[in-house]
Image (cartoon, rainbow, N blue to C red; front, side):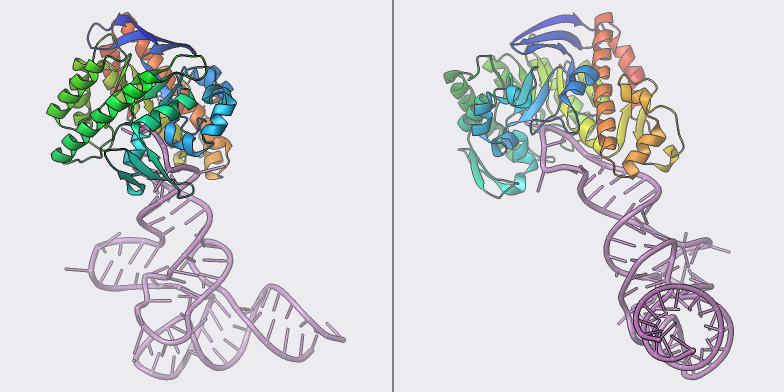
Length: 376
RNA sequence: GGGGGGAUUCCAGAGCGGUCAAAUGGGGCAGACUGUAAAUCUGUUGGCUAAGCCUUCGGAGGUUCGAAUCCUCCUCCCCCCA
């Protein structure tokens, strides 16, 4: 993987760059749609590529390990070939499941034992095992196994957890560097900064991660319920320490405004379930604000879903029709909404990139942000 | 013509003398969702000058301290027999 910075914003720390992988290039800043189980829910790959213009998508170690399982993935020749997606893939390590499935796992120094949400069976995830699984999945970018701490988090716990995450990181790196990819393309391992909302821990972690000298770095443990100001404060603090010549990935973020604000702080990569999950629940993100398409006010609104939208569904279908699909529980509803939201997110980061190149990102961001969270 | 069953708040459907503005489901309305246990979850759904009051359980009377619940008549619906 290579990363080159192509432009730097005049008024902020935002930058535009290019990540090169064996499955193609990625223009940053980028939003990566989440496809946990080997599918971006409700989306065809063709639309993902041609309409949404996704350049890289996510998969998840925990979910793919449980289903379809390593044997199937290896026989298929890795996730790219299994799911018929030729562009870059990034896999999360299961570190988020340490947080989201906290009630069905046991955490020890050695690793984490998860009780499957599918059949209740128990599986031990060690840093080494997680590297092996991600070798079998074969994503271009793979993530270190970490503990994503909850919010709020006691200082002492956050500190203890950080020690564990760092020790796991060493084991991940050591094991990753000792092994090779299975399918002939390169893989790269990103470490993850933790430290909850504590400045000293974040600084310590960012330094530790920077010293690992990997090709890209991630910031985790944010957007778990903390106030936005805390999230931005931690992000800025960490970005200033992580090497400038490596891509910075803010995990699990976020809302359109979170993304623009974080780009201004120097973040290059984002992923979040919000555009896909919320789409399935009837929430549309647009450049003018947020639409809850189930609301009665759209019942007789025959105007396009999003007159400024870049997806064909935006002009092709009316709000009244999309509302009808949701109210009637028709599966086309979530499909159309997902296509819209992802297209909007990808449009947003592309637009951000243009403004970074033009040097006026900060001003543009400042006019956009108040609009994005408005309720239509 | 004879016999039987039923009419409940938007719908279906509990309730069968006070704890009933009335279970439950559906529908409606609104909200939540941030490295996906999510096509999920939550709230709300008679009116008001609201911790109280008013009007509601097919219609009209009646019994009772008190009725959606008991009695009488009426209207309409369903089933069975001829």
